[in-house]
Amino acid sequence: MTGKQIRLVVDDERCQGHNRCRLLAPDLIEIDDLGFAHAKGDGRVPPEQSEKARLAVKNCPEFALRLETDD
Image 1 (spheres, one colour):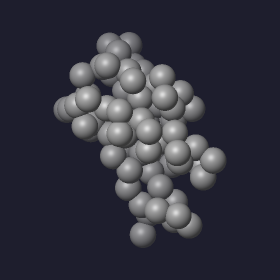
Image 2: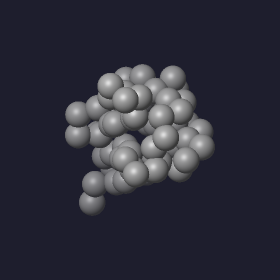
Image 3: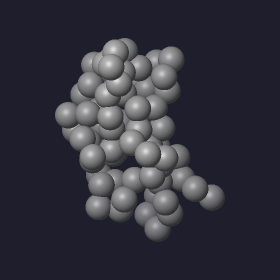
């Protein structure tokens, strides 16, 4: 994924509100009033935040996060 723009995507149907992602990547994730995660803005991940984004994806117990590349 190096050199390409990556985007963090949250699957609303899978998210159960554990909020591990928010703890690991607070600059990339926001939590709604019900406690569910959403990617901030359009989900684009700045290069300096890419490792935090990957860590958040790996630590989601519901597999509700994924990274996509802009082609």
